[in-house]
Image (tube, rainbow, N blue to C red):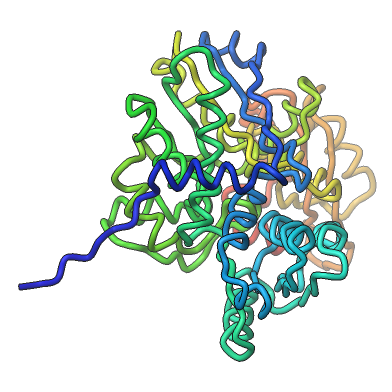
Length: 421
């Protein structure tokens, strides 16, 4: 007879205890109605502003709850974590507050802003070690260091105390809302926050539907649920770094599989447009993972009409140096930015002819790379064109072909696009 494996599920008593534990460091974040999104969706859209924590994300909840649960011997030995951003800052803050020595492994490619923030929150209590090109590289190095030095690893999502700390987001939502909550949209990376919310709402509001949202380029939870087992993705788009993992947690996967109402993915470009809209129209600064839940609302327009809907805005650790890429991805998704290999005849006036006769009146060249090294009749250039409407693309391509300027279209060739652009 096979032994029954007990699957962990966060208990409401433990979640209430976590709320008491983190109360000294994590202020209650606002639950704000979005007038704009409420009007556009015909629903009561509420934003849970987890981006307003001191460390600018909900990760302080789980990190502090986990470290606070350790024995004095474990605290004296010190803690270790691996992170490229939000979890690192949460752990650093907790270490400084509790006066626990922490070692934080971050990938070498981590933006300087995030490294500086981690050092600022941790102060003398934290050492930052840059190791590897990816989070997985850093995590392996961190776990090896733990084994060698006898320290405790503080996992960003696959840990009971971390999950229970994140679950306190749900307690606040229910305490702050005067109406029953019909839907909660939550970003899913490793699944810690989603699992915690499942625990809270199953106990206190079981009719609430929890929708998990992943980046289209990193659908590790969705693929695991579809295949009925933990799946490790070989390649992921790391752009939405706060929610892009190759493999979700062994604790979080069964919880999400059983209790999430639905898992959906959102294209990175759509998330980028949401980031720009939130900044330009609402004066809200969010990181890509923080915009995931709001970007997903369009897929549920009919379902959520007249309902009370909460979107968890998970964080705002966005690096301003990424703005150009965010704008670019948004335009590509909206089919307003297009890249071509254009073959210019090597004769005087060819470029002028292209601008005057080929481009439409509202088309704008935003990228141009040309080298007159070819002895062939038509020398290639990489040209980026921004359109006013997606409908302008077909006529532009036709004019290029009719006048022998057309070489190739790069947007639908990701490998070539990445190499050339």
